[in-house]
Image (cartoon, rainbow, N blue to C red; front, side, top):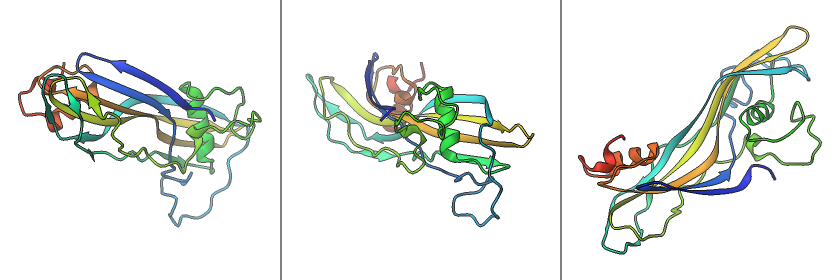
Amino acid sequence: MRGTGRRIRLTGLTAVALVAGLTACTGGGGGGGGGDAHGTTAARPKACRGGTFTWSGIKQSDRLTGVSASQRLGKGGGALKNPLRRVYTPHPSVRTEGPELSPAEVLFSLGKRIGEIDSTAATLADDDSGTTYVFTDVHAKPPALDQSFTRTGAAGDIVTYAGVREAAGTFRYSCADGTTTTGRARTWKVDLAGLVICGETADVAIARQAARLSCEAGSGGVESG
């Protein structure tokens, strides 16, 4: 299974981020023309096979999904007990206009474009490697708000947080007969977790957002820096 099992620990001045490769997505449009998978729009013709994807405006960004209330710990730290509350639920989507195109094919192309999927096949249908690409799973659920940090050696007012790294872009799928399908896709590819100490400057954007939500106003961790 590709796109899973990657784990990197990043350490900053006041934030520790755990990055786990949990590539996943859900279909927000089911390939429908700007609608959702439960819409009642008339059936559309299928897009051709062997077309060409062209991507533009691809952006990858971290989004805060959960944050805890601050917890004061003395010298030597201790157990982290405050649960995370959800502040954002990722809703990956594939929306299209024109001949119907499989959301999985769109996400396969996006995954190749951003380096999340390593395949020499032009399309998912042509990939005969036997690999399951989790990035193309339009039915995968967003990550649960599990507490990744149970203890810390840090002292002070501690806030823990969770997030996802999202990828989004606009595409055009062109066929040899001149027909095209256009649309936009968004999904999340990694699950993030970390902690921030109120009163100290955080060097990770979502850590600063978590501090703004849970630290007292005027705390150093609340400032953008």
